[in-house]
Length: 404
Image (cartoon, rainbow, N blue to C red; front, top):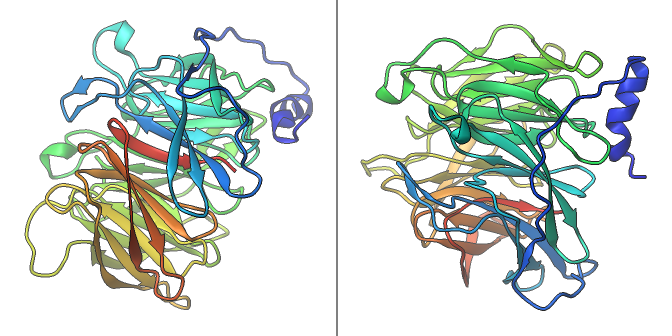
């Protein structure tokens, strides 16, 4: 058995207890195939890419997708070929792959007064040989409009951020099934802009080591630090939250792969704030804030996503709003200071999310409102994005994840 799939039982044995709880189950409807069934060759030049989407019209998006899509990515050309579509799920706007690569966890971004509209997190089984997804179960996200889900380093817990209801910790069983939340935390406070009338958790993610968990809240202009008590199955606040400039609207956070630096993209101000990470306390100390907007241009950036190249030399951030581009930065390896290199148009509208391939050669961007995923090559010498001409039509794509 994969070592990751044993994480949950080992935690329970160490605690000398057995937790048995009822989980709501999703239908085990088979994945819809879009081509003749065949094994997916990932050994040499192919790798699976899982795509999260919006499936229906909402206030901020006209969703047109059918669920989660699985594609085959060609590592030589950068081309994408669709393999399958998931069993039904509403608005799987963000997803994550379990460290074992056996399971996919996706939010269902819904909410409102109706009980039927409450947000959920859904678990899927991934057959890597065929690229097919099978539903396992679904549980409450414990808040409205869940928008982010991640897995801790042990593979034993899923963590979800609800835009309309705080953060939650969900244990994962040995078969990939999700348990009901064991911790739910609602942040408090608000910011100075209309979008910040209340807390809006937008991300929860493990730090670069196993000590700390970070939750980014757009509504309060704060990044909260927690520790994970695996035996007690709970998140514990750790120290004071890092505070951004009022009205920044922090959205997504990324950590440098080598040095103790972290960077958050601020949606409302169109900026990136750089932090020094204290490896002992987990505290974040800011040392730079830099604009993502091209000089001399006015308008809304709607900054969305942020990632660092595997080499640690370059950082990229997406701008939506009036920009529709990727801002590219060089990272000073000693100080962590960012230097703007330029902007690359995404050849689409509303680049909500993008992904860098682990080999550092490709960057793929999901243009939500134009319904396309564009493949770029990354120049290994300069870090600049190079056009490939590969433009794949995918309905309302908003999250891209490679399967290791």
